[in-house]
Length: 361
Image (cartoon, rainbow, N blue to C red; front, top):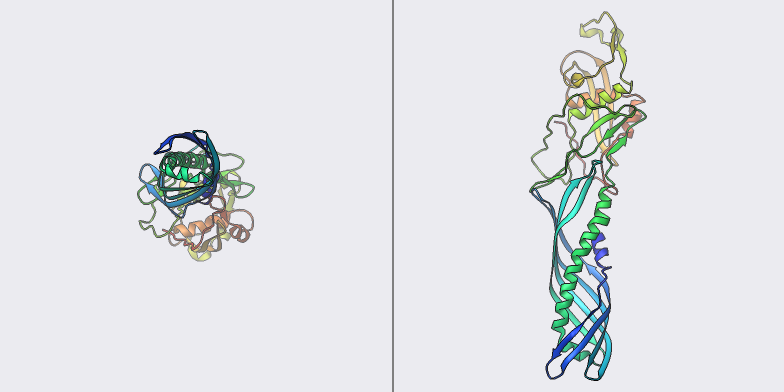
């Protein structure tokens, strides 16, 4: 709203001229020039999602004030002066359509705009200012129509030049280290429902050396039914599965498992070496477990955490949180430093998260 308020305060209004008949005076030729907006205030605004449409911005009780010069001519008399105009109870309704471009970044455009001004008051000063005040209703009507048209023109301009440019700051890729990155690009245009705007991001790790197609599709991801918080981020096991594939393609997950790496209490002597050189979808799904502990949080727009992975015991399937810990344990580099550095979330510039809650399902 601050950007739109600034844009509207810089409205360029055209000069106005015309003829009007005034009782007992006759035909009067008038001209209004050098119209200068002092300010434009938008004190009340509301943004609501409209199902299958996009977003609706409703602005109420807006007001503005402008100054200008006037000239008048009737019979053989000419005069000039200044005037002050106050515009009150301005209502603006804007409909915004959401989409995505070929790079997977969001787009936004104005699909509809309407502006109505309930009250316009003009005060003319000067020697013949009283003459203008005799037909102020004509002047007010013309100024009202011009302002209503100009407001929507500037709204469309502001959405295109400011809001669309701002949405382009959403990162679609993030480099994690020298081997992998994350693809956060949109897979479809954002969807508006009656309660929220949903955006499906690809959410895939990829090898910087070889960006290949993931050999399995993502499973549906459902969010909690409550809407107590402003923003919800969700990541399924697909996200972490692709991490395993990306690091494997980068040559980081090729290692050997031997008897010495397995607890002797598990009762499952291997008797030989295993060379792990292939990742598949089942690499994060069902496996024996040990004592794995991962504490995950969000700090400064990044997923961070700490990790403690014990020895393999072969007892129960891993939970999603434990598999996250196992994955992070095997990521190359010092794991504690890597966890403390974290993974970036896809956030627009100048967006900060607060009251963060992390849950595993």
